[in-house]
Length: 82
Image (tube, rainbow, N blue to C red):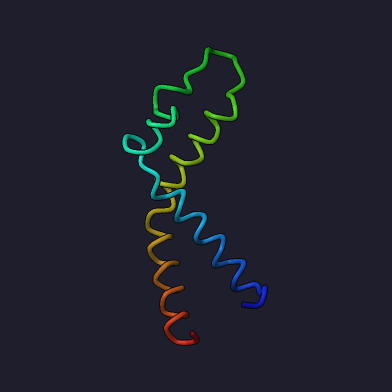
């Protein structure tokens, strides 16, 4: 498989899919990344862990419908062009 723009976009799509399917109660809570873990005080800078949790939550919330559409397009392209 050659390194093309399509393979790079497909790898990015797979990474976003992997983020989107992470479940807080089944997976993230077991490794200590639950919803109650990243609570900081007022005026404190959020840590890396809480920023990553916010990123995971926002990807799951915002990218739900676009991921369905982009995955469908990727599947159709793979079926048509191999």
